[in-house]
Image 1 (cartoon, helix red, strand yellow):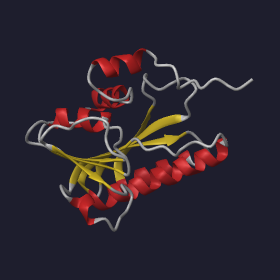
Image 2 (cartoon, helix red, strand yellow):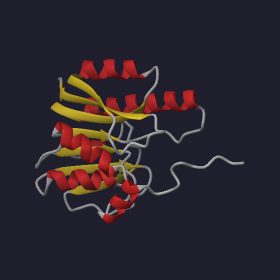
Image 3 (cartoon, helix red, strand yellow):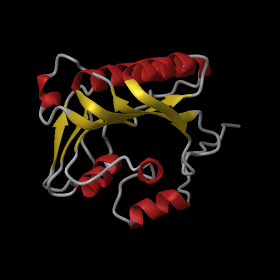
Length: 198
């Protein structure tokens, strides 16, 4: 008998996101992180790495207002329209050689809700998540402004301490948040850096 996909059935977060005009339930994770850390404010410049389907970009663009600027980057097209203060770039969000990523740099906030396409092999998925996180952090290091913040998804694993060490090297503060909207079976957690050093 095939295993049931726990992600197939919409839960109340999924339905609430659709009702609010967001393509995915992940918007509530960023909303909680923002509420708990006061991450996003009017006039900020934000880079959203791996932005599809677009919930994080849409939420962040609303929070930074008309005077802010957001660049959403993904290999896949977005499933939602963005407001005029935001632009979408179809391309490799993790390419340090992609000068287009610097369109609104230096960024006050760099976001990454990226996760690997899971294989079912827990160890392999954890390693690939760590690699994605570290590459996103490298982009934030290059394009983030002094005093800025980083939020990145990472799977809980033996590699998590190494990711936290690198965050502490680059940022004045570091913390982990597991938002209420995270499914109970999920390995994901969000690692945050605040007060970017030089």
